Length: 226
Image 1 (cartoon, one colour):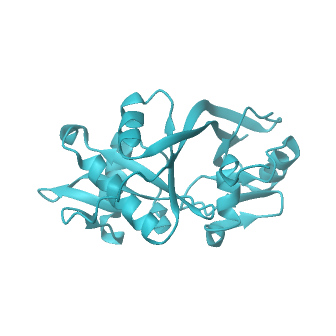
Image 2: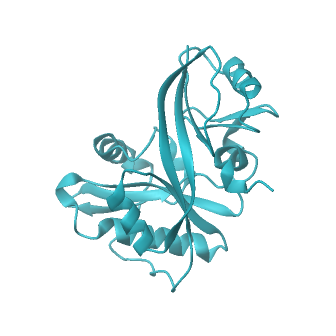
Image 3: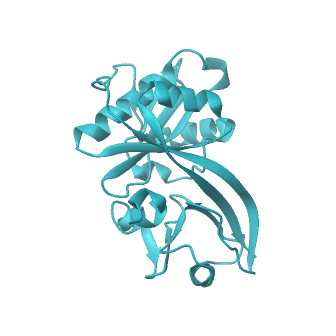
């Protein structure tokens, strides 16, 4: 039986993130100002053609798949790269809320866009904040680290946008922010998970230290409608 996390974007768009979804019974995509993510029911060429017909020219989409897929004509492949999916395995109570962390609101969006443009943790758009529960750490009124939540394929919630300003690495900010997200997610009886590029060994080691374990090697595709 296929695991729900083998097709996390599709399953998020039919469960926990369905309020952001447009499309049909074979292909869905998330609201364009929230993110570029799209999901296909079975990751077939036919469904990619369905998605192609739904989108405007030059639309950009991100797919997470459990293996290599066939890309039909009409798409330009911008990226095909190995991605590690990790799931939280409770070993000890997660850290409680840290008073240094600030709940990020609409007023913080310019700073969030600036930080993610600098650190490139993954796609971050003008309304990505609507995924919810973003938190940050400020130094002298500058946002220097943040993370939040993204995909919600029930009963899982993805930890995302983990980033730290390069002038403030090595201070434990990412660990504090991720621990807070673990606390928030498990407090509502959901299961934290995340995605990380397989070549980002420093991040993988941090996530393992915080209780995440490898579940599956995935692929990320970034495609543009030709």
